[in-house]
Length: 206
Image 1: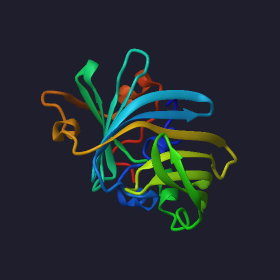
Image 2 (image 1 turned 135 degrees about the vertical axis):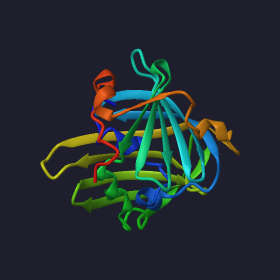
Image 3 (image 1 turned 45 degrees about the vertical axis):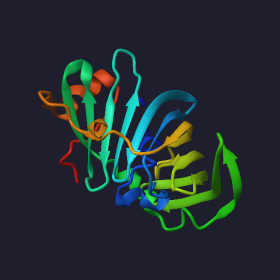
Image 4 (image 1 turned 135 degrees about the horizontal axis):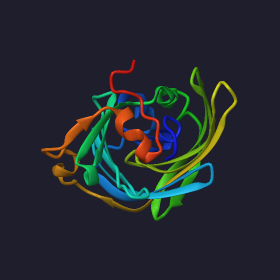
């Protein structure tokens, strides 16, 4: 999670907004351990979802940012409990590649991944933001249990990505998990991003 937006692509791959719905909008609530590997760097966190909203927690040195994502908004929130701060940011434009209608048109078989029955899809999609290729494993409820692939920008920068969910628990999640805490200060992305080693787009970015 060194730089956004590329680092956010796998993080948001299950986002239930319109841009990512073609990846199989999960129709159920669940929680899981999330394994994320970007260019060989591994990050383990947890996520919670109810239809239309997600919470991701990630351990970073000295921080534990919480990402709150809503299906009906192009703006996400990063909650930093240690700093009593909330940062709004614009979803990366690169996510538009996830709206490609071709993403789920190439099922290649059925597999059990971490105890969950899935359908495996071959992914090969191109958009102005770049080219994505690899494989995606979706559960019958539309949960992306696993994905592996590479993303290449028009300028030739290549990132390799692996995403995996473990210890999946289906069921309703506490609504409080997705609410903004009271009494926290709201700051612009540029005020906090250097502390996290990230590059966040302002919430008003088009």
